[in-house]
Length: 195
Image 1 (cartoon, rainbow, N blue to C red):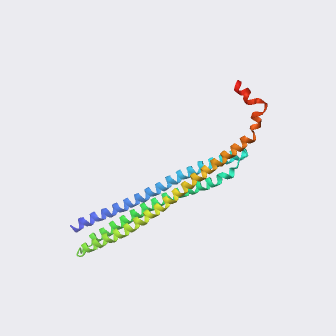
Image 2: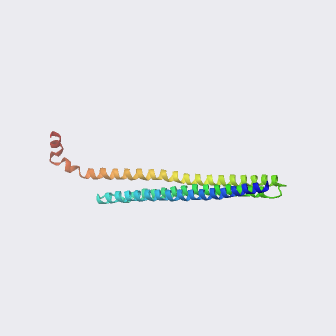
Image 3: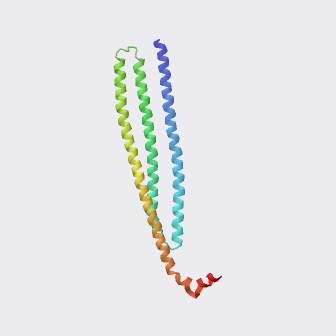
């Protein structure tokens, strides 16, 4: 009976190794895929900022107004990277804690002398519950802080973007007001309207 249990326990230990390695591999895949997508977003976003900057500069408008929006955009991307890192780290630690708990549980069951095993199992479960709940709360607080930072920067980005648009609209009105004489001289509007 004990030998059959040993085989089953060893089989579960191997399953733990496979599951842990698979989970860690999945975490790495998520990081690589997400990192690639974020790099793509960065590249296209900053190319757009450069294009807008050049257009504004060529048309004698104030491109420096884009700087706060660009900086906020960059910080938002950094926060997105932090969120992914926090989620991956949380999943990794949770998986490791689960595997450790199961290994320790199996170690108790694998013992030839099972007297006192019930007490050991109760202590193991209590310890695991304390550690896991403490980590879970800590992990959630880190994620919430990162998400809060992301929201704060999103609000800042929206505010900066609207300020840039408003400033450039004011600049356009000023440019148009400087050039109204061109449109009004020679009764140009009246001729256009009659045709």
